Length: 283
Image (spheres, one colour):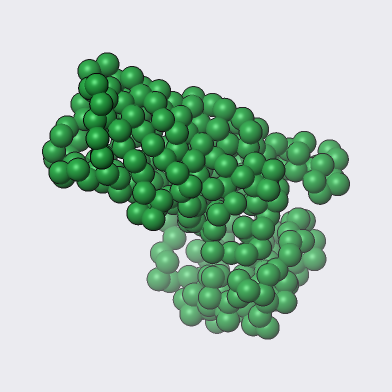
């Protein structure tokens, strides 16, 4: 175990062996959470109808990676959900504006809309509810599952929503979560990514056994590369000045000699493809 309050060369040598296998794959799941503040204006023939208010609806997504977690938001265009409490049969349509996706990074969002969602070509993400499982209470807290068809990037797939809701009078507040395996659904495939970049045959998705570091100096070089990446892309002059990197923390917590050694490691032989564009609006 590495003590984070006492970083030294010996502790990182241990880490070099502990993390000999470096995982470089992006988790193929996109998590979204919706806060739906809806009114139930009427019920007809045992059928309840929920009208979703775009102004009161928040749609957030979370994308997990091996180093950090990305959070963002989408906007609701319209939404109506109807269901029969006796049979559970449901209907309606929920439409999300795919072009509104915003993760707080202009460069990342530009790539997301152009290369992943292709939102100019597929501007809508929709969900058509078909069945409700569980009891929808007229008042208080309850949990149900909503099965239906989810359409994104022009492809439709079955999807189940997990709903935690509270009913008060004619207002329903619900927290809905679900997972979108966008890689398995073909939203971004290796062939597509390579075609966009003009790099036929390049390997895009890596497994953890792809790089097996057995020499501590190789680990140290990669540690230095990560901390100096912002300098490499000419975002800052000193690595510790970039607030979204651990370089400043590393400088404060590591021994002076070990910090200097890592930051002076030669990184020209570290084979990493990161020739991405930097948008100064994100700095």
